[in-house]
Every structure is written in C-alpha cells, then in structure tokens.
Image (cartoon, rainbow, N blue to C red):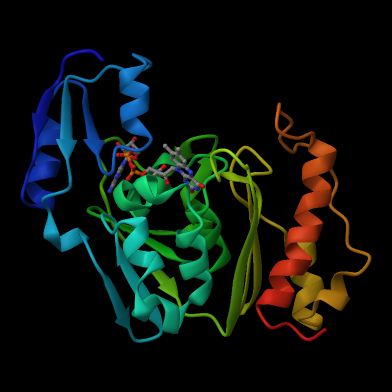
Length: 267
Ligand SMILES: Cc1cc2nc3c(=O)[nH]c(=O)nc-3n(C[C@H](O)[C@H](O)[C@H](O)COP(=O)(O)OP(=O)(O)OC[C@H]3O[C@@H](n4cnc5c(N)ncnc54)[C@H](O)[C@@H]3O)c2cc1C
C-alpha cells in the first residue's frame, strides 16, 4: 500500500470540501473493493475520505411509494431490515446473497453502485426498479447512472447520498453466483411496476443492462410461460474463465424465467 492521509469528516459538506481541496483524493466506504486495490498497489491516492462517520447518509426509510436507502447502509442492514422485507423483499434477497458475512458487514449500498462492478448485485436493482440516485449535487435516473465497465455518471468528487427505490407491485432477483466470491455470474432483477415491466441483467455484460424484448413479452403476460421460447443472443456478452458468452446468454434466460416465477408471475 502506498502512503496516504486519512480523514473522517462528520458531514457530507465537509467530505465534499476535502475532495475539492486535496490533490488525488478518494472516497472510502466499506473498503471491500477499494482496500484490496490499494493493498495490491493497483491505485494510489494522496487522501482517503472515509464516509463512515456521516450519520445522515445511513439508514433505511419508507417514504410514500418508495424506499430510500442511505449510501452508507451496509448490506447486512438491508438484508435484515423489516422495512425492506415488507416493501421490496427482492432487495432482502439481493443484499443477503452478497459475498459472505464479512463483506455484508462492511460493504455498503452506495459503494457498490459507485464502484459499478459488472458482476455486482445492486446495479440490477437500481436499473430494474427504475430507482433514482441522489447525490450531493443532483438526482440521477437509474437508466442514466451506469455507463460501462466500472463507469458511472458520477462526476469527480460527487458523493452518492442515497438511492430512492420505487416500491414495485411484484419483483424478484435471482442470480447464478460464482461459487467462490458469490458475485453474479449472471443475475436478473425483474419488476412489475405501475409504469410497466422492467428487467435488468447483471454479470453478463460490461455493465448492467435492460432486456427490453423480454420486458415487452412480460408487459403482455407477466408469467414464466410468456418466456417459453425466449432466448438471449450471446453477442457482446462477457466471456472469461468462469463462463463463455453462450453459457451466460443461456443462463440469463433461465434466471429470468425463475425470477418471474419467484415474483409471483402467473404460470
Ligand atoms: C470477497 C468479496 C466478495 C464479494 N461478493 C459480492 C457479491 O456477491 N455481490 C456484490 O454485489 N458485491 C460483492 N462484493 C463487493 C462488495 O459488495 C462491496 O461492498 C462493494 O463493491 C463496494 O462497497 P464498499 O462499501 O466496500 O465500497 P469501497 O470499496 O469503500 O468503495 C468502492 C468505490 O466506490 C466509491 N464510493 C464509495 N462510496 C461512495 C459514495 N457514497 N459516493 C461516491 N463514491 C463512493 C469509492 O471511492 C470506491 O471507488 C464482494 C467483495 C469481496 C471482497
């Protein structure tokens, strides 16, 4: 690890000021993705700005037809929250399936979406529910947030404060986890909302994406049966030591059917 200065601001304003004043600063949340990178000397920053003492960006709240989850809320808190379970049980499943207990005890929702790992689980919920990312500068629609491999719409120095997840009529998240890390080899989040059906896929491409042809089929008939002949083309999907693009394409269709059934879609 290269040397850096460590800071623990008590407010978002203080954190933002630090980010603006330091030469090469970096936000630190749960550290589950950032610290391994630093330990391997794959990155170097002059200053780490730790968000863990800022209470205003922690916690889970039901706000009308949405669930608002603070950026510094740990995965374990989402997985064990009664409020989440009542409003969006698919998020309970998603958070409870992330990594292992250590990762869930340290990792945060905001860190996960800001990191935008192509195999991360939360991006599929942000896109699949049509959520809104609230930063210290603006609100970003889930459809506009994920831009590519480890790339988001966040500007340098912009801080994710919370995500507003609309409560769906029906939703489910099913993933085929890598047996070692539990990251999604393929994960599918499906939601039926008042505005229509949304399907978001993680793990299969450079970043999370929507499956609009499946959404059109499910809008007519929200059931696994509607997807009987549905297939996914492997073009552009990830191929690595874990799975070929063809394998992932097949897995997406299988996980999608399971997700619709789990969401309570007519069979
Ligand atoms: C062994 C292992 C297994 C894992 N398995 C899974 C899995 O199955 N599914 C899954 O989804 N993830 C998995 N993860 C990743 C885990 O969910 C991390 O919690 C997540 O990637 C990063 O969150 P963090 O809070 O640790 O962020 P950090 O590592 O602290 O930060 C990650 C990045 O986000 C930035 N950042 C953090 N917070 C903010 C913010 N509020 N605003 C703006 N930028 C911010 C940081 O500057 C950094 O660039 C795994 C990780 C490990 C180590």
